[in-house]
Image 1 (spheres, rainbow, N blue to C red):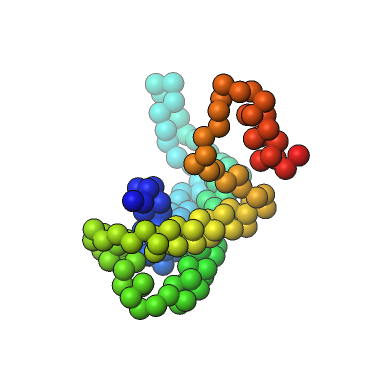
Image 2: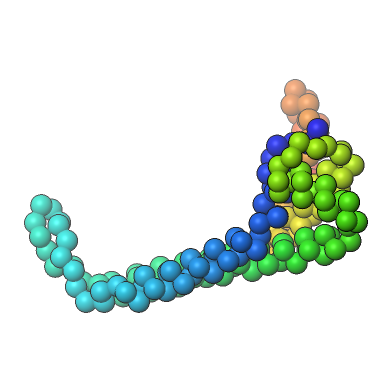
Length: 165
């Protein structure tokens, strides 16, 4: 039977376009909120007194630009994932598509280990490629293999193998 985390991750791939749309809406909200700000002064309570506080242009603009950049990077990553998932989806037969839709979109209790493993592997590869695209660094892939922690030499060998040393 499949891992619940894998199932949840696969399920998110059926809603990537909605996530892109929501991220675009958030960018519009950021822009609207920023443009509706008072760029002059405001009155705030400080040290139990009412004082006038100036608009901190550098801080506000920097925060605004950073928020927009993060949202745009998120959209770029989601589009990358969507493109590759759609490529995978187009290669499937109609019966496989029906199974995946029932299993991961409609959450029906149907099981096919072969198809589940196929989509888990594909989504894992897409996630790895997306991580690499974002950071430029190959992510560490965790395995289900247990390391004998009582043997320090084995642990060291595993780490060196992982680091390709």
